[in-house]
Length: 429
Image (cartoon, rainbow, N blue to C red):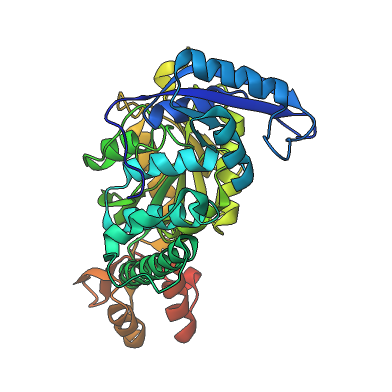
């Protein structure tokens, strides 16, 4: 990983500016959480408002002097901006403030670098870091030589910047090649699950909404869960057995956030496919968060970016233990289908209702019945066996087959169509 992290929290000054031309501005509270999650020790928050960013320093000269005074007084080691800075703005600010300057994307990348546990996660983080830092070569990339060996790498008469750019390109190609291999393996696993008709349920939601705590509560897993942003970065899959449905695969994924940099969404495309190709999304919401509605909108925006906005979704309002009148319940639409479930993952309240709602939504696409097959419908019986949809068979006193079925409804309807029958003509046992 690029960033060599200090062992203790770095003293940080945070900068949050509201702009008049933006439809909505959010306070600095979430950015403070991001900074703390990265291991920073925020000593001051500089706020202000402008019509538009200054092209040279992002902030005006007066605000820049204010930031500089705080940096000197507090002996700050880093200044964090809750905004996207251009490479030139970052360099100009570092020159004026005499300390490191990091924008919102750089800060989130730093958190991701700390949280990545798996080989794939680390590769994705490094790819995003490289792409983000590629325009900031002024800092130098000679540390890349440690990863490939410096001798024989530098051509005669080649400048340091040219060498760094070539090292960067080589490293990018290497990571992309390795990621392609990992992605191919993940795709094979998804196809295998699809062939075996095992439904996938993916947990999505705003970061720190309690996804991992809920995941652990339902599956009995021990995924790392903490009260911090991006506690989970790598996807984790676990098996879950539900009545009426059977085995399903539950996937815990990275949390979303407002203004999640597009580069990060792209870098984690393979990870997010677990959500985009799920049979059901559980959108986990912190019911007690004052920004609940905004957080829901942010998650839905990212789901749209990864092409998962049309998937069946069940909203799970978590942390009802923090509400004054939080009671576990299922909210249904006009057709009686579950649309919201209210639970407390920490206390284990409402988990049975959640499992019931999941089973109801998934069982809509699964035939799980016992039927009577007359003696003259041998072809129909044979096709059900060929499809692997017969769980059990016995015979009644007339010699007719009594079949216990479990198979996808679309496969069942195709078989009926081939034998020229309808669901209404099938006799239930």
